[in-house]
Figure 1 (tube, rainbow, N blue to C red):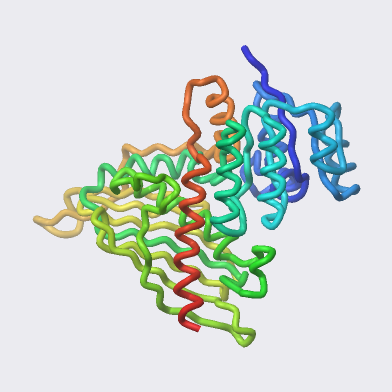
Figure 2 (figure 1 turned 90 degrees about the vertical axis):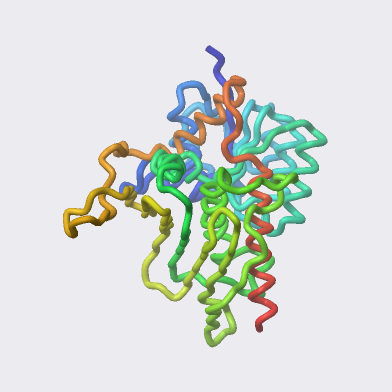
Length: 349
């Protein structure tokens, strides 16, 4: 059985330290997920922060550490390179990784600050024949994949509503250079899962980097005293579903991520920490009626496997037994959909 070597660039939160969060399903960071897979040997890490490097090396005994990715690649190129740096460094670090010519690059979301930067990554990946996987984690989670399968059992789609609530600004022109706003940081997950759930019901675009969602109608825009956007709702009408809404709030004192899908014979309510599947059954409340009730056929495991399954998909891809479930093309389509929302927000200033 082939064993693959791996290295990680960026040993911060998503790269490493979320693995110590006892409330999260583990593994919750790239380091832990790579180490947990018996087909992978994590051999090196790079980070510009000396304290992070030292902590990572204490935890990953036997692996080498480097201050820069250039030093890492000069010492040897592994089969898998995971890029888990800040958003504003994604383009440069991902292109460096591609040019080192590993067998696969795993890139943390979002791909880049703009779709133009993301296309530069795609062009480089094509020229060097290096595939890139993007960590849109819900594509790998058992609960979300069960939701996608169950959508084929709820009849014709009537409504899909996706909501994200947090305390982070939704958009600010002042943060274009670092991506420190929720539309990019969290919105990439929201748009990606919507397009993932709908892709079986839509005529896919010929160019897979183009979004399934058309240009939206954006309303409900709220700006704070600094002019930062704190609320919006984007509405779409597509042949597969007459009402698709995406709402984001940056005024909330809690974090919530949820999708509600209504069909003609069933419903799915799913989000962080819950997943409920309903089907139309003989009503216990009204004679001659049918009501929605929990579908007993759906059995969800205690663990979603969102990070572990992502790494396993990388192994299966390298084995030649499975395609990438979160390829670069779909992540670029997500960025373009987000930019269409942003364009509407900016035009309404």
